[in-house]
Amino acid sequence: MKPNAMLFAAAALAFSLSPVGAESVLKIRPFGDLKQIDPIVTSDYMVRNHGYMVYDTLFAMDEKLEIKPQMVESYEISADNMTYTFRLRDGLKFHNGAAVVANDVVASLKRWGKKDGLGQTLIAKTAKLEAVDDKTVRLVLAEPWGLVLDALGKPSSNVPFIMPASIAATPADQSITDPVGSGPFIMKKDEWVPGAKIVYVRNPNYTPRADAPSGLAGAKIAKVDRVEWHYIPDAQTALNALQAGEIDILEEIPPDLLPVIRSVKDIKIVRQDSLGAQAVFRMNTIQPPFNNQKIRQAVSYMINQKTFLSAYIDDPAQITECPSFYMCASPYKTDAGWPKPDMAKAKQLIAESGYDGTPVVILHAQESGPTNTFSLVAAQVMREIGLKVDAQAMDWGTLVGRRASKAPTSQGGWSLFISAPTGADMMEPVGHLALRSNCDKAWFGWPCDETIEKLRAEFAVTVDIEKRKKLAEQIQLRAVETVPYWPIGQISLMRAQSARVDGVLNAAIPVYWNISKK
Image (cartoon, rainbow, N blue to C red; front, side, top):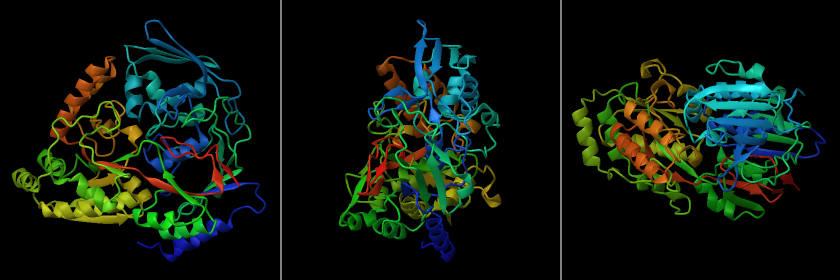
């Protein structure tokens, strides 16, 4: 859908607001709009990406998917693996000039631990989390748990970003409004124009690590003075802006524009993240009709990954059929129990379910290429198996707000949304964004299953890789039965960048430090 005149005007105004005489400005068209700035209260990837601009983390994942120290200078693990002691590196400061101290770390981790799946497990297994002195944090486990560093260095939503203790004191179900962090960039909140533009400037007080940049780890060097995100809903308009030199990077290129871009001189197409994404069919399990397990099971037979993926793009380099809840690159990938697509079986299950005609309300984000295409295909095949469909068009930011509602569909609630979480969130059972079935603490859709949760807990304390694989398989078998969501397949999101930029990192998340501009 083409943007209306107001959106064009807002985009034009955003470009005109760029400061005259700026030394260097990197301009990006992100995949969506930034509606809020709290990366803990929501798992929205736009807010996560904002978080990487303004916050830092204790640990980070490098290009080889290994967890490395980031804000931490050194750490020790006791012989019994029950006590972790972290010492912060020198020179860490927040944007307001205050030093980052251990109390900030403790407060930030406790808030994060109320929302994130791995964080919830870590805090539940922690006997003590305390500041020993301004530079030292001690974490004492109540029982053995081998994923402490994995949790503290997890790359995606929700990321354990470190913020001032005064801000981290905000209840985890209330959004923060102060963007002060200690990362390489500072948000210029006075220049934030929702629906048009977000501005970040170099943090003069940031001290990078001495390590070479690698993925999300190592030195975070702000090589430009200013980074601007320009929200341009229409992809063709964004491409025109890239060709005209008005923006430098274009995220999430729609497949129909790829041939056009490949023919343009001085524009390069690269993967947006190193792990790709898993497209997911996410159902609201607490509201009709998907509170009915048989209807969810019908979905598992209804979805033909090849049909969905080829509707988006017919390029083997960008799509992968993967009959597993885990990414195909994961050591835990398994096809155990996976049903073959069968529309007749899907129709049979709908008939057996007692379906009463309650419409499936789809939150249909139209400006995001994969979610738009997959939502259209989903609406068609759901009608074919006998479900009524109410597809409600919106932008991604509106979807993010709506999906938090637990209200009935008649009162602004929802039945289904389609998303494409990064592969970093879908690799193993404990940190898995969509497999978690811990009721109110689960991701939007709130699946609730005691068996899956017991198996996930056992996985978390198991060290032997073969035993872990068996547990991952058992979790999949149970999830095939309960259907907390269903994978549509794997996709590689692509972005285009001008030849003027250099240093874009190969990371699990699109980040914008270390980039220089000619």
